[in-house]
Length: 292
Image 1 (cartoon, helix red, strand yellow):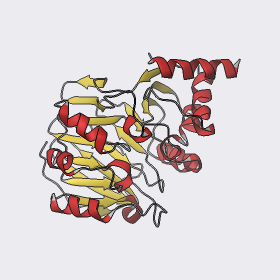
Image 2 (cartoon, one colour):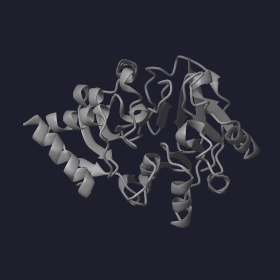
Image 3 (cartoon, one colour):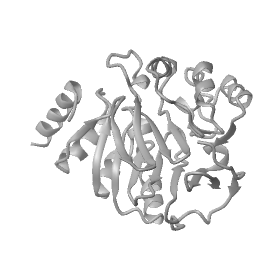
Image 4 (cartoon, rainbow, N blue to C red):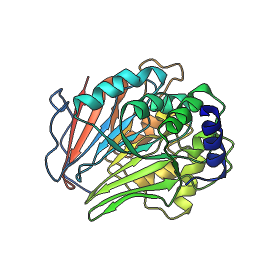
């Protein structure tokens, strides 16, 4: 029965499933861990999960969203972090694309936490990691919403969470299926790129999407196949967050990307150097703290 449920999920995935604030320099602090979120504030956490991605968003309306879940061995780190921050429910869970360093621990998170909505792009993979995620979804009796450009995850007064990509449906590179998420709270915006590469960035620009953001989660861990100059010039980020592992075998981030970001005037924050990076905003001002 479980295999049948997983097979049905794979088929459904294949067919198509259901600002300018005043900034404060980053400070090293463990006080933000478990710190209660003030009313009217939004907090975005870029977890240090080594060579992978995992982001937690605490919305001002009390809801929570997890974007990606690191590698298969990241589950304990992620779940301990969620619990330390009082997260009892994930209203939205997004797997940007089916690479192990992004969805590795999604299955464990789905098993352990109540989840409201799960979003995945319309693409499948033959890996054990991907099958584990589908099995966890099937075991919960949940359906999957297709993550694609034009999907509004959340829309309230002063708060918007929408997908800008993927726009296409037949990429050679799996990275270009990445769900690209723009979070906007009043005057402050975050752009979470997943592993979207130059092809997807060009499509976003051609679509006329507003990619401007105060904080850019740099695509593909700082690889030189992402963060094209034309895209970066439109985003104009004040902060550029790169999620990656120390001494990784891919030699991320690429020196040309660091040069581009510096020339663009962005302050570069790397999880391999800073640990977990946390932004808190009231929709105007931005406070940055790091947890090593």
